[in-house]
Image 1: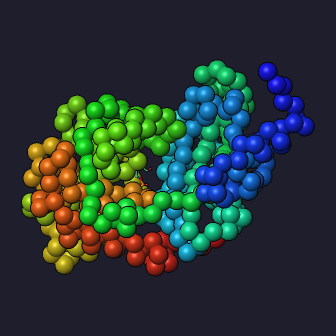
Image 2: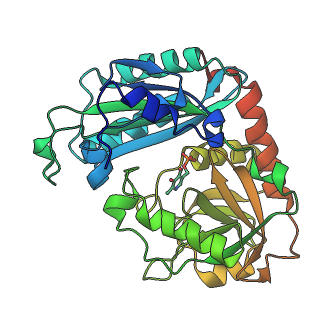
Image 3: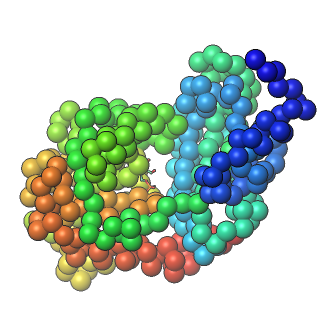
Length: 321
Ligand SMILES: Cc1ncc(COP(=O)(O)O)c(C=O)c1O
């Protein structure tokens, strides 16, 4: 077996160049103390507990026309997620914001996504978080996906997931233990649907692999599952604010949280999916049955347009880099 020394390393890394690297624009690593723009250098140490224990938290936001959309709620959720697992970045939220905007400037893209990962950091291959010497911060800027309805205007096909839902303690924290989420996405791909959604042991709807779900009831109420059991999606919260416009003009009766059963979904006028990359998605089929008449409804379409305009045009929601 070949032993690779420090001097052989650049050549070994160079051989790992891959076509998908063209989507990776820049990465900050506190371990390296700087930014790399060559994708083969975008590495994380194996002894970071992030890698071998999933011990870390993350958040992802998107940027359009050089504006980071809704960045502050993403940063606050990152800090809250970190605090809930006893992790703290020494420079706090201001330092993370400064570094993130710095990487975005170096990446120099009008449209992209940014993922911030706050990790327990290197220190051992053990499980104890106390064996990490200091937290590590990684920030990567890469090409994000396009809004779902642009790709599939006829709407999404969804099935009920068989993966046990996460305990509320973990579902509400955006931590790097995403194995249940990964398995949900695997189900969706294997079953030939766009998304799957979880239901808890009480029969109440939870969320998707990386997105929140809601319904419009026959009484025109827009309802999302109680936030105590799911990730408090930044898109969901913003969509709920924007939806108040539809309440004012009478298109919706109310906007709020509630328990959603399979029966509620079967009877719903619309089923919606919301998330950072997706914007607002209308579901056309749930478990092979059409939602209402099986075409995107007016509320979903209106909200998708509202969030699109918010992302590209609402100066108050954009941090320019
Ligand atoms: C499990 C889960 N639920 C919901 C969401 C949607 O959150 P946001 O709208 O903040 O992207 C995400 C985002 O990745 C997620 O991972």
